[in-house]
Length: 66
Image (cartoon, rainbow, N blue to C red):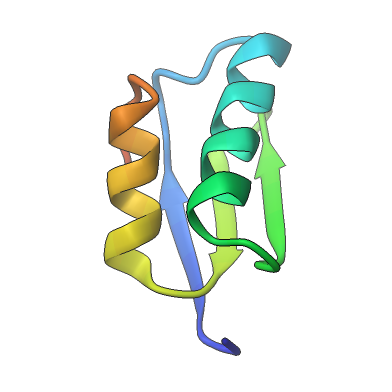
């Protein structure tokens, strides 16, 4: 699980959003390294990109390539 994915999530607008995105990724990718930055709207994680993107979408957000 060393491949890092960086996505932009522009509809992540508050601290609650950050927590929701982080939890969705933690649930979908246990043990992944996860970084969520509200200021830049960047989400970085290790693990399967498709799984991470799907988890973010299921949480109600729109991930895009960074």
